[in-house]
Length: 206
Ligand code: URA
Ligand code: SF4
Image (tube, rainbow, N blue to C red):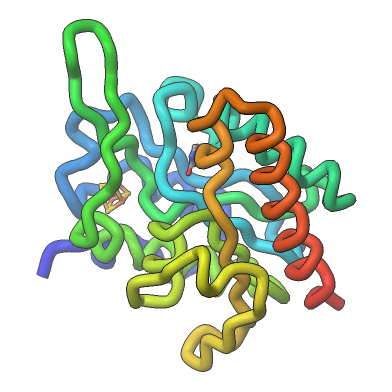
């Protein structure tokens, strides 16, 4: 079965994991991406946030959540009183899946096969960081972390017991969901809902 496993070194060192991820060929997504986007944040983090995959800006800069969705996330973290530099921030899939249309690169959701192929990296990060809580930003992250389909609307904000992970999981909506509307009230309600879920997650750290 293809997947990242053979590229993941047996180590709890984030710099070593990051370096090894650069040569991952666990699925085909590396071919059209600029570079791998591994993670940001310290191993000492008590909160681990998992996104979907790098976007266009992240692919070019090599850092997670530095584009438009990252600005929404920054806003939500700030409102929740969580210091971004102290959380561990990563993605379910480490390479940018997209479709080229002329000069534009259009985001494509990762398939379940990509989520599964990339999961060994997520497992290595969980083992390295050992957070008190994992926050899944959107359904793709939920699927990756919990290993099953997740319905955000039905499951958000309430800690989910994940026995094989040994750490509680909180799911919330993806920050980019807020960017789909131009209506200001709708945007603010979307961010407020994420803030509530982040607060619930932060309450599980100790
Ligand atoms: N969306 C994500 O899920 N992750 C990123 O890093 C950027 C945008
Ligand atoms: Fe490896 Fe994940 Fe990139 Fe696929 S998306 S090549 S599994 S790092």
